[in-house]
Amino acid sequence: MSAPASSKVAISTHDPNSFANNRHARVTHSHLNIAVNFNESVLRGSVEHSVELLQPTGELVLDTDGKLKVSKVELVSGGALSFAFGASDSTFGVPLVVSLPADAQAAGSKLVVRVSYETSPDAGAIQWLPKEQTKGGKHPYLFTQCQAIHARSLLPCQDTPSNKFTYSARVEVDAPLRALMSAQSSEEVAETKGAARVQYDFKQPEPIPSYLLALAVGALESRRVGPRSHVWSEAEMVEAGAFEFAKTEEFIKAGEDVCGPYPWGIYDILLLPPSFPYGGMENPCLTFVTPTLLAGDRSLANVVAHEIAHSWFGNFVTSETWESFWMNEGFTVFLERKIVKALQGKAHQDLHAQIGLNDLEKSIDRFGADHPFTCLCPRLQGVDPDDAFSSVPYEKGFNFLTYLENLVGGEEVMNPFLRAHCQRFAHSTVNSEQWKPFFLDYMLNVAKVPQDKLNQIDWDTWYHKPGMPVVSNQFDQSLIQGSNDLANLLLAGGEAAGKVGKDALASWDSAQIVIFLERLISAQKDANASGDAEKQAALRERLQAIDALFNFTASRNSELRFRWLTLAIRAVPALEDRYPAVEAFLREQGRMKYIRPLFRDLYESDGKGRTFGVELFKTIGKQYHSIAQKMVARDLHLDE
Image 1 (tube, rainbow, N blue to C red):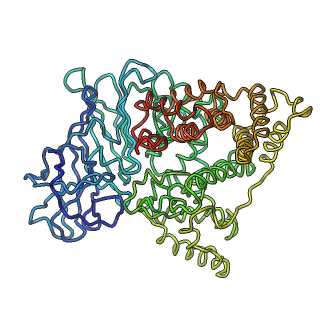
Image 2 (spheres, rainbow, N blue to C red):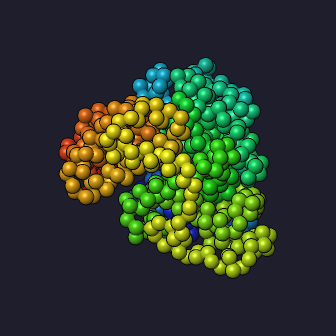
Image 3 (cartoon, rainbow, N blue to C red):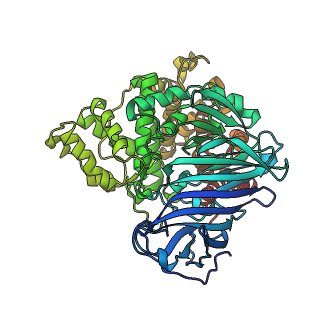
């Protein structure tokens, strides 16, 4: 039965974003047996939770989104269990409270509870795509996105990163579709109901948090790109994906050199349809990535390096709650840039660090320097973690770790520490306060860093002060300077600018061109802030000349195209002749990194941008993932 609004059960939990109290009971293994129904856009079946009681309790509390239809709860060993739903919360859903039998309420009791259920057609974790929204256009497609707290719409579970569990699954789909999960797949495919339906079996022997549970179903093919890696996608994109991600094994080996053996066996990549809302999602054994990475020259493949780095930070060692999310993302960016250094050199590592610092400044400008979401460890009591999502945990976390590395003696000290970190917290979770004494103890007693150096670390300010990092790290400027010099030359105009040829950027790395465009964006911000109409008009003219020279509007590289369209929208008056290019970009992909800033800029732009943006979103918004729909509607103030 679905959750009645009137039924209320008192719930206590230590996680601010979860009803499930895994201090009393924890799920250690889950087995899913589900059938995918594209006609109704639902999953039907059951989940069997192996539960261990940590304290005496008469209840097992699971998270749901309030839309799951639960038909039955029972012990696998036999016997129905009574259940009720708690009070509904608009952000966190509804707790499912299962009454445990009297002989299984003592600490140490172990039992297997089966919940039979059905998802809602508008479950937040699941995007159902009709065949018309796929690349092939012949078969429907679905994919899930459970981070941060959307697994509770996929199944009743302990939807908190503080609990990790192994899982197995049997998934039934229409033939000839293929199912994939964040797990190892059985080579055998069992036919059922004739040739019309097929079943796929999966197992994940490493414990994971609920947000890493992932499922995709579609007309999928694979190409091998390494000894432990395949690229999966629709036939129409799979070759392009195999080319783009050909260096996957090099990335994995570079990560292993720092953190130790890759712990997940296989590392496959699923190239998703355009509506996927993120650049990548680190689902173990099967990273999900956006097709906006298909630049044709492997220039955006560092996103895969980031997701590979998550194999150790986030997946193997997991932040206990979303308030320590920086311990997933900051550590991952830190390792990602070490991988970049191993493959491309220190100058490129610092180039990416500078781009990240620019992104951090934008996030803090958008929130406001005093906003609590700009703290490294934000308080999220009663807050949807999606609302706090930004570059802050990524880039402020990276800068904190970079500061610590410089303080304790460089990577000769820090790299062995990262490996020790992975060994100490392997398969488990950690929060910021637990990590601090571990770091200090290692540095003092293993690395022999002097106490007076460690006393310099202002932990409270780094953790809890909003705004930019309290210490400014210095990055190599050799590649950055060339980008800024050319940008300044073209901004100045005149005879020297006229001598710049169309091939001036031909030998540049994509990241160098990003810095070039970031310099133009900075100049535009200054011109707009000045209110000087002549200055704004001159800059607008220079931007048109630059696009005539390099044709950024037609770039295949999404990072470059996004920044160029940002410039076009923010020009005063806006370059409205570029609006068709803006619309094309917003129609062809749903990555929030791009669509949210562009819609925000349209809303705030000079001229007809606000009307254009609002009407466009009303027309195409339904093609975006539900998370993206929610966030863009908020950006456009359509939820007020």
